[in-house]
Length: 157
Image (cartoon, rainbow, N blue to C red; front, top):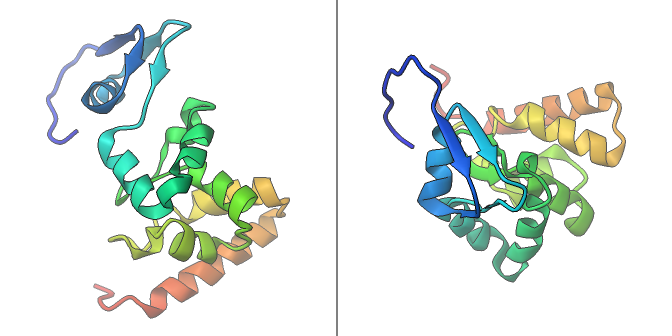
């Protein structure tokens, strides 16, 4: 959601049933979300559209991963609609083995305004968990990606 209002009390969303699109965006803007056991959350339209543009007919696989838990739906970067579930899909279904591969080919986060700099730590950590990387390997992946991203950076100011 864009814009903001100053409210000194917490805003609570009570979700009973299906919550998608604009309703989900509104719930995500709240301070507290309370869901009944049978509540189902979907992704906002822009994110679904983005996933379809990246994955085509395989979008359902990413959506299935995203439906496992709320964490999988978290955005990777404020400049991109990419979500956490894409990392698991890239590693398990597409054999992504490097952060650069995920950032530039699998999700295109590297083509966003920040060139993926806002997401690189999260991506390396999640890929590290899936691929069994040590902290040193995660740092090496981050450094290699940042070096690659800096080649395309036109303005350093």
